[in-house]
Length: 597
Ligand SMILES: Nc1ncnc2c1ncn2[C@@H]1O[C@H](COP(=O)(O)OP(=O)(O)OP(=O)(O)O)[C@@H](O)[C@H]1O
Image 1: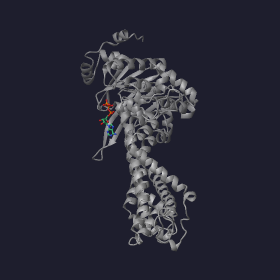
Image 2: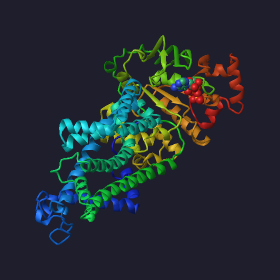
Image 3: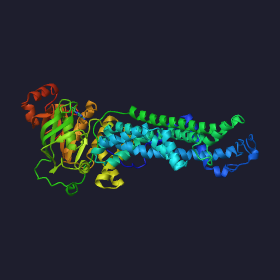
Image 4: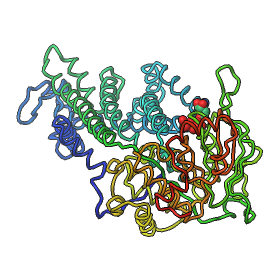
């Protein structure tokens, strides 16, 4: 699920504000930042504040000690050291900027795509990255300098490309980590394109680690560039810290103090960058820990549906009384270790009519979620799916491209997950996450989406919709998060709602409310609903029909009352005996909850 910018009236402090405050609480980071700022400003202003021309040779003043005219003395050629260091700072900073930019450009997008899509792109990109890492860097640099000259740009770009595997691997592993997060699934279910998911949800997560690593890399770039100058591989006419250090060593016997100034310039800058990077890492890490600490369990996730647009989706209108969803002979398998496929769903056939609730029950691992994900088109790439028919509103889902499925998930199917907190992106406000799918799918303005979101929040029983709209997920209780996700799920009027154990993560009292809410919304909107659960008590509460799954197959399927009064399959009887011992008959439950059917 996703989001738009909330209105700013009651917004809590944004994540960036918390990070800044955490950073400012670290004195070392602040001092390092100030030192860096001073170095950057002094280097930029070098043409105006340097007391002398950095290239002016006055042999008569060779190796002059510090004086008013030359505050840091002069080098072996009588050039003013302070002026050369100020100008040299520009070179060092430019070197760092070029190298880090090249490393980011080569490493980060590749890591993002490799981590997100895996498969062949990952294999190729990882191979290239490993190859780059195995190259002898100094030899490559010497070859580049020999063929392209000692210009700063080609040298530092080469170094950046050679360093890019570092950022590639960092980004790739961060993306692989976040890709497993449920809020990414939620974003997919809400119909967001891969580009928006990567840009909005994943990029924000990798930004911190990439920034931190880049600041270290910047320090390394300064050292590398200075080292090249020191070894005589730079341009002798270009004032630089490394070049000054090299000259100082040449005159070490006569004026050993000359190494101090360029050494301090390099050491101080690199140290400040490292400390700054470490403080940045701490502040980002602190924010993340805070969020996780407030995590509360709860259910549902938002999705959207949209105005029915058969032309857009290529669907044909369903016959008036025909089922909304038809699944015939669905099978899902995964590659096994011995090369044979492991079948996790086999020969599953079911249908759901508009306004009908189908319960999909079975023990853990019986294939309920895999069946749901197959319908939603959200199985991982390694899954093999086949079905004789898989139709939603008359449209065959199995032949659709991922792009059309994306749109369908936004427009016709919605999903309410088991763990609501994990399905909300901690970096965005509830309002943002609720309104983005609506704006995107329903093509409505920000203010309309906000109005709609506030109404939905009120409808799902959130006591202060405006406040919740502006809140971040960690500020919600589990039950509230669950309601928010249900609001998101119905926000674009889906026709089919798949709720996967929506009450697992909340306490018993909230469970009852959530089930009642789902049932009310389903009836109000005449949605077809699949309720995935292992609890026959829940089935008794809100389902019209039940399909009992075991070991990937449906072993019995019939109307709820019939199933309860006449369970035929041995497994169904066992389920009934074990889970319904304390359950009340449906009518009695409805009466007690004041529900009219
Ligand atoms: N990516 C995967 N690769 C291989 N097997 C998988 C994969 N995902 C799920 N499975 C297997 O598919 C089977 C069915 O899983 P599924 O999640 O559908 O069960 P479930 O009935 O929903 O269980 P639960 O109630 O615990 O969620 C399980 O045996 C599971 O190990």
